[in-house]
Image (cartoon, rainbow, N blue to C red):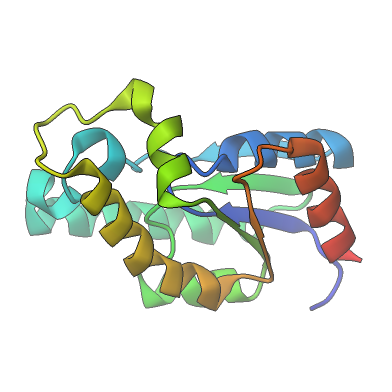
Length: 168
């Protein structure tokens, strides 16, 4: 990988992507971009396709691709991504060419962090939903990751240093 000009933070809703991205951007003096615009599985309590249908999900995916294609042309940015960013091969291919951080968190921590945002729609087993989606996406997040770390301990400063050290 050549000189790093962009950092993308990927992971599940509740992992702390936005907090980490903002802190890394501040430390580097780069622009922070919040591109987590469609991530809603944890809030809705259902997979997106169950709420907006297949055509709505396709439109959402097209929009996420357009956003990412624009961002990979920018310099000195740290981007918190949508939880769906790695769900298509095209976006995974784009992210593989960038410095991409996979921020993980255990299901227990995710549920605890999302507890103020419990599903807007009824769901029988919230833990199972979060775990299923987490396990499905982890494969894609690992595929694109340059660097991975767990946010379970909540030590933002240590996580920032981990990202910056991994850039060297």
